[in-house]
Structures are given as C-alpha cells and as structure tokens.
Length: 276
Image (cartoon, rainbow, N blue to C red; front, side, top):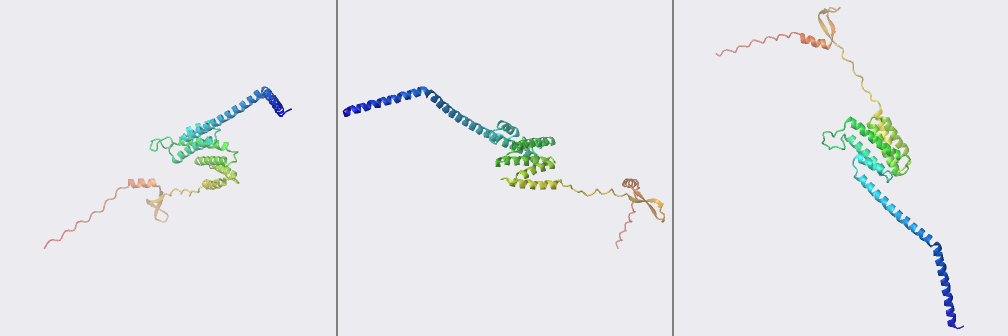
C-alpha cells in the first residue's frame, strides 16, 4: 500500500468517525434538546422577571421617600405611614414626625394649621387635649412596633417614642405614667450602644420626683379679732370705762352715723398798724 492509499484510508476513517459523532449529537439533540432549550428559556425569563421586580421595588421605594418628604401635616403623614408599612422605616418616621408636629404646636400654644396672626391661632383646651391624645397614640404605635428591636436604629425609634409618651404624660399631669416610660428606657438602654439614653431618662426621673414632692404652704392666718371699743356711759368694776368688742361693720356704721364736728372758729384778723 502506497503512502497515498494510506492517507486516503485515514481520511475516510476520519470522515466516518465525524459522521458518527454528528449522528450521535443530532440524536442527543432530538432526545434532550427541547428540554434543555426550555430550561434555558425559563432561566432567562426568571432573570428578566427578577430584574424587573428589583427595578419596580426601587421605584416604589423612591416614590415612598418622595411622599414622606412632601408631607407636612399630620393627616398626610399618617396616610404615608399607612401606605408604606413595609418600605424601610418610612412608616415609623412618618408617625414620629406627625406626633412631633402635634407636640410642637402644643408647646408653642399655636395651631399648626393656622397663620401666626390668625384670630383662632391659639389652642383651645379641648383641641389641646385632643392633640395630646393623638400624639400619644402615634408614639405608642411606634413603641409597640419596635418593642423587640435590638439594632441601634430600632432602639433609637423605640426610645424616641417612649420619650415622647413621657412628655405627653407629663403635660397631662400624669407623672406616674411618665416615670414608667422613662424607667423602661433606663432599663433597656443598659449595655447597649445607646446607654446615654438611659442617663437622660434617669435625669428626667429625678426631675419628675422633685415635681411630685408635696409643696408645703403656710397655714392661713385666722381672721383678726374685733377691736374693743368703749361703750359711752358704761363703767367696769374698777370704775373705768367698759370696753365692749365691736365688729368692723358696727364700727363703720357708728362712724357713718356720727354727727360731724363743728370746726374751730377762725382767729380774728389782726388790724394793721396805722400810718404815722
């Protein structure tokens, strides 16, 4: 066999081997190709859906923060909190800001929904009590949602809400409730990154106790005893005038009924000396 024949034989064998490989690949594609293509399309669809979902959540988060930034009044802040309960800490921030708006107006004794010079800008007692109740409700909601938080951010919201509730209770005159909120802060702040909040709470507790101490007032002096006045013509056992107690009203009546005294006569004018 010549060299050319050997080369032709090798080429034929290689062609047969490649043909068998191609046939096996085609058979494999016919058997599994559709399933693999389906899996690939499914993975691509899931990746696109995940990307779309992430972009949607980002847009919702941006819109929620924009709503929070544009809300100024407690009513709008409450709506923002209700719509975005699961978006970051927007609900907590909206409730705290709404409660703070109420408390700022109460401390300034001026309504936040009126101009400074308006005739009805001052708070009425009824509106003051209503806004204190609203602020306490908002603070209580934040404190309840963060009661089990251990992170620094969660504890910050929890302590701020409790400080707010203590301020409301103190303004309403309920010093016992205010002390209870402050003691909760003092106990939970120990050993945390916000231990200074416990120190502030302890200082406020001391000030509350000084306010709760009873104030001692001097007893009211008794009314003055009636002044004894002499009764005309009456004498006592010693031969002097008898002194009979006379009330203030009787004295006024006696003075009013007394006859006016005649004025003393004026001295006669001295004649001038005659000229020489």
